[in-house]
Image (tube, rainbow, N blue to C red; front, side, top):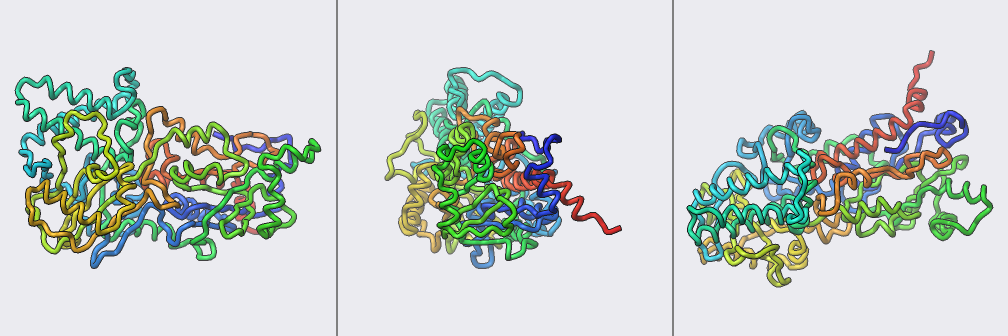
Length: 556
């Protein structure tokens, strides 16, 4: 981690000058999702007064998006508070009464992929028959046993065998298949059903991991993701209530919506000083465009006596000078835009971390029906394609994107949601779904439900609502995962502030990074995002702790 200490042999470095003049540093936060809001809230509470938030979209919340639907709220993004004990999101919700109407069915201990722990999952085949409950439970026990094995490689330092290709999907499929085929008590038809269920379970797992396929998830790193103890909770009033709590004390003058950033120019002052010292005007990292940028885009320096090391250039051509910028862009945006977004370019090792880590799209498809066609005890309809039993990683042509829909969950309680199903789809197939219109998706889902339940009379839903995280240019994916070839070290490299150098000639902590993908233990979660924002705010608070002590000292 970069040192925040100031060299004792220099009293004229940028930080020392700021401390002497009691100048408030200018901080720009890019993104108003949970990470950006948490960072901003922490900075303001710590006494920073010159903070600006730039949010590309027209709303706050990022990958939290609660949609009002009649008398209830549907979550297009984050749905669950994962764990309670020590989870800042849980405590924020609990302390503010957001969980008062959470039902017992919406509190679940252990792994969760349903909206309620009550009821029974109906595993239906593409021939329209339901797989017997005892067979489902038997297979589920086997799958969960192998799932526990996948955790041991990281947690116990267990070596990964070459046959697994360091892939959760390859390992799981191989081990489960061997156990199924070697079971002397099962008939061939039962074995085929279990092998088909394996593919369905891996699709569900991919949706939970937000990976295109579990074959892409690193086996050696899978167990590093840390589960917070305690139950998972749904917030009946909507996850946006958490966003509102974080944003409520942020002044409107700080928040700028509809303000996409074009480029972050960093290390500006250090470059100028170096060029003057060496008399070399030809070795500019960015082809010498800094002064031109300021002239073209009308940048105004609020403190003419201070050379700001950063200029944040917006798409509307306004430029904001700053001492520090906290970038909370998603990993998907960084993958797509890092070359254009930073000048000079990011260091090679940070670029490599961005490229190695994984992010994909997990989308939801909500279908509302006038009346339920499912039985009262049914909490989900799981799609098991019998013809996929012997496939390795299923790959579908574009027109068969719907085969990646793994299930439809029943939203409980019906008194709150009415008769609503929530479907899940991930990977490239989710992007294909996003390109279709509502009518096509509704019709396709209706055909699937008719086929798998064996009920040709299921009506088309009266309403459809779906997410589109993959095609959202300001999000580009749902959440991150450790892809084969990546590690927790890449997460830490992504989170490391710039510049790396400890030299006092370059102002420290110019570009900081936050967001769920930057949290080594809690990536992919809302609490990981929130904690990462607080982490970066703490770096700056500690950097300027002497300034704050001085400015808050009482008059004697």
